[in-house]
Length: 124
Image 1 (cartoon, rainbow, N blue to C red):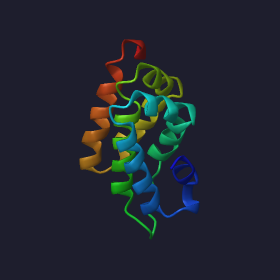
Image 2: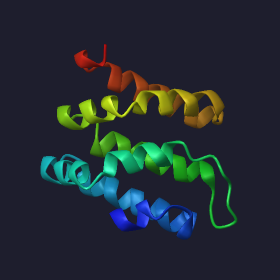
Image 3: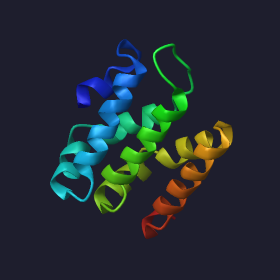
Image 4: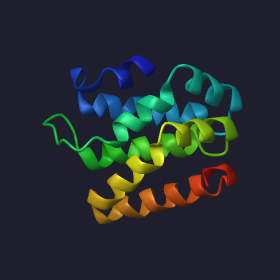
């Protein structure tokens, strides 16, 4: 799954969206999978895909970003080391940029994600 989401535009957008959904479900409430996701550079891949703004013929950018934010919520949030890594690679700035330019429905999810990551006392 990591190879599919890492491949970028070489793989159709809808296939990458499905891969993010699967990764999200695998990491949900599973610390071992969250740890493995972090070790395989999954958090960096999330950050890159949160900055995605292109609309391709193969899929919908809004549902793709929804799946990336869902994966962020399940694979990073709630795991202190993963949250710290996301903060260290300046993922909050990418979320802020996304919240500024995305559509209204995604904006609420972005703001919710920003609020969740800022609950970490080390974010300040």
